[in-house]
Length: 69
Image (tube, rainbow, N blue to C red; front, side):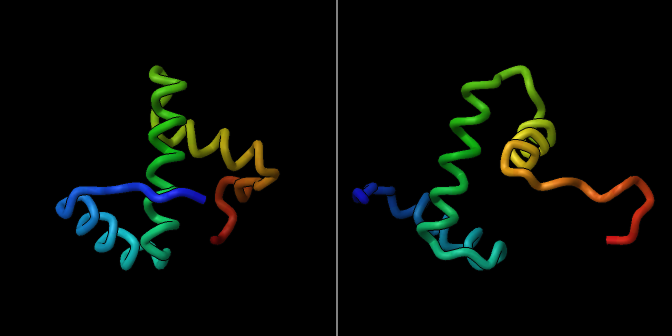
């Protein structure tokens, strides 16, 4: 585990987003890092497709169309 230095403004944004997403500040920063890596590695894919592929790779299946959430 390492230490990442963030400027104060970015840290404030991570803190706010973590509260909304019910994640720790570290978990929110890690999530944004992973999403950023996926976006850079797959620049032609939209965000929703990146997430869908990540969920499928993890074995998570979307509910059938029209199924209640």
